[in-house]
Image 1 (cartoon, rainbow, N blue to C red):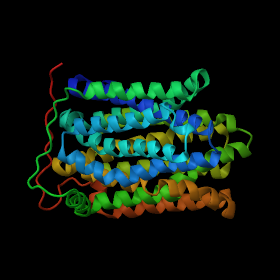
Image 2 (image 1 turned 30 degrees about the vertical axis):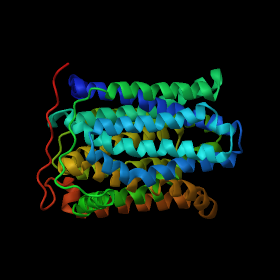
Image 3 (image 1 turned 90 degrees about the vertical axis):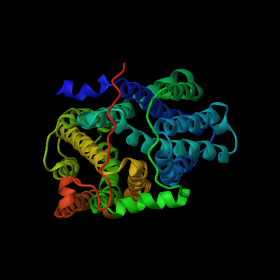
Length: 415
């Protein structure tokens, strides 16, 4: 299992990019903590919410543009552009943006969100050109494991740096991480996607939306993700610390999050070598494993049972993510892949802040149990209904009508 998981690292180009992005992802986690420390040092707690909202709004706003750029230029260059934009954002906070008028913090936080919107579609679209098809799932699993692990380790490192040297020290470490990422992207020999006609940015963005509409299974899964993030995952994320606090076990929150990350790593290991003729059924049902966590919270089951449920949740998230990303990379033509991934990202993130904001309101009005039962009902319906569509069950084995098959460029084997 582990040998299958590590196979993509045999390919020098992928190994180079993966290393840079692993360090960059760690820096992202450091930035989250550093931003909180920098803003709260000079502004009110409510202002922090507005600064973080500026980052999210920019990510959503720029996401389609990120997909267009990923399909117009070499993906490695689009990622490098993203690193430059985020370097400027971090540098703004290093030189004191958080100390000045709040609008400066909004501006540089928005640059961080815009940079992430440029990065995500380009990275997802680059991977098929760095590894052969038989290693594609393992490459996506490795990426997923790295990102989820960095989401735990990065904030922990950021907290340590914040305690030892303050926000500026943590921000400088984040700046270095983007510099390392830039260095690893230099010399990556990917090719720009082939383009049949010159179109405006608006026309190309519209073509990305059309490519999603031409694949009902992609539209359905994006819609499913939006519904689940709004009505299931948002309440689960908010209720976990609330219920632990009510039980006098808030100190276990960090352990629960770490257990979910451990489950994600395990899920990545399994998904890397998973062979299934119904990848859609497997992926969609894997997401439904979150129901076990919701049930544990509703019934106030012992902490060790909840901990196991967190592992199961992380496992399901990772299995779905690997199967879904691999299906998109195989089914969507290379010249459209960046834009389709940007639409997928837009659907994923657009309403996520709304779900997190509304969850506490719903809890206050309806109570913990009612919100959890409602979330379980939505999870069940949003799992069963999509599976009535054959292409969802298969995660779209065939290209959409009129499309040429997606070409996967063999990875370069030079070391």
